[in-house]
Length: 139
Image 1: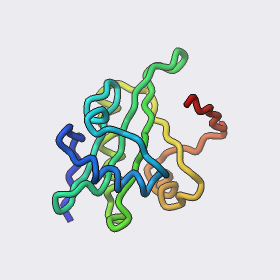
Image 2: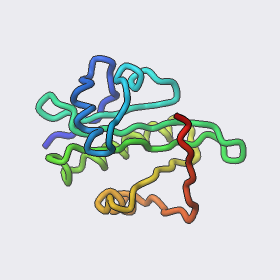
Image 3: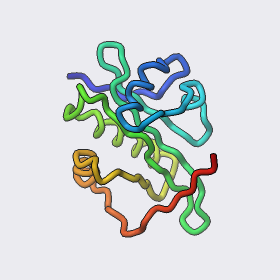
């Protein structure tokens, strides 16, 4: 199976991404044109048979005591295409982008229920942090 990672385009299918994101979260809200053109956000996809089957994003921000840091967001592969190396390919592509941009660190979060994703992160040498994430919904 040929794996080619490419940047998300404003011409890519909203519906195909919707289907993917629904496998990751309830009620996803996004606009493919915004994702494809957002500043400091690099979205990558893999297509098979003309359809988007894997997606991941690298969001970049500045941390005063760390420098520029990247966060991997919304890494998801269609359930029919898992265990084919697509998640690995997306991560390697985004890591390469981060290195070219001079980032000092990449972070990601993963739900403990996503055991296969966590195995992938361990395989690719991601280190589990001891910090807890706190958040507050503003809407």
